[in-house]
Length: 267
Image (tube, rainbow, N blue to C red; front, side, top):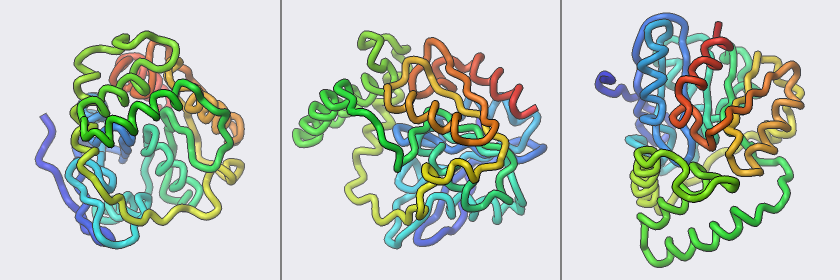
């Protein structure tokens, strides 16, 4: 069981996070289809060797969007400063991976290692994806109809099953969890103004000198696979691992394999 959450004041909002364990600092940043609870299995597993830190990013879980322009990377720095952490290893999935990549570019002195999971950073050119386009139309229709559970089902279809597996291929408990997360996320009407890194990290990958591991589920959507392969190819000496039998949340769908790969890299 996780301890009571902690909070830190950032620009215009109070950011919620978990911090558990003792040892070198290890930060987990969640995907845009989840909240910090997606990392609960990893906090349990890794807190015996690390101090594990997992925030709710702006607009997710217990962290509100706030009323002022904000930067998710600055929110992470606010947590590190509050805990007295000079630098940490950072694991980020999807949206969280983009934040981790931004931090490695903008604040390399604060990042010891980065693990980018299912990341397709903004600024890369992706081929059109008929699978996502079809689901995108259904997603928008469900939003217009106010059918938030159907929105969640479509999100699960896209990011858990992926384009090469039939619907329902992912575990039922995980599908229900993603639908629950989606129901919470759908309550956000205004995501405010996020201050983007300029130029974006996707155009500065060669600047990254932080040891980097890229992990992607082999069943993830094509643009994510493409993004991960590009990031791994353009960051000097980055390693790429493609996990079979998993899509966008491999830490949950293939927990044992994911934790093994992560352990080897952190060691």
